[in-house]
Image (cartoon, rainbow, N blue to C red; front, side):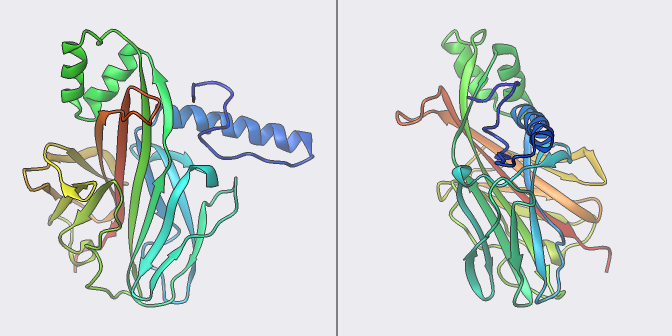
Length: 286
């Protein structure tokens, strides 16, 4: 399982190059990515453009880090359950080269709203007690802290099996009113209830949080802007899974949330966590 040491598991940046110097450089980069991935709390989709022209071919990057301070996350087929593009012309898989960054390429054939979705396999991660408790507190998972305390486990390390459910909303050709609220069927999914491209700075974005297709209460949802990521908007989902966040400036936004449950019998861990994100580009004032 990943630890902060020489590990290639989380980055996917494995190379078969014969040039030993280039291989060592790649290995060093990969170890750094693996360590940052083990520590990082944010994972998001970052296309070359959120507002492509119809017919454009886009590179699709995956990023891992904290508060938009991230590194590229290379494509690893063994870690991909689903990587898709859904648009007015239908759905298609996002192709890419194993072990390479950017993680994918797509052609935007039609104007309108297009939705990218990424769902990963489980990655187990063992954390010492203090780091695990800090992570729970940071992500608003106090109910897990309380459960560990009740079981006398607060001072014990934990094995967490996490997976990622990332989405990105694109607007091609400056058009698109339909499709922002499409549901991809990710285990943990953030679904906008207004079109972000019809909003402007100062508006509220209503979202619905779904876990395995059903609304879920109490998930802490955080929104941050790339220009000032430390200024967060945060709220918890209500009994209908709904949350409203004020977007105070234009530009790229990352909305995220985490849900954790005791690991099911077929997952070799103490806890299973789903990390959801949604990225888009809020327009300048109309």
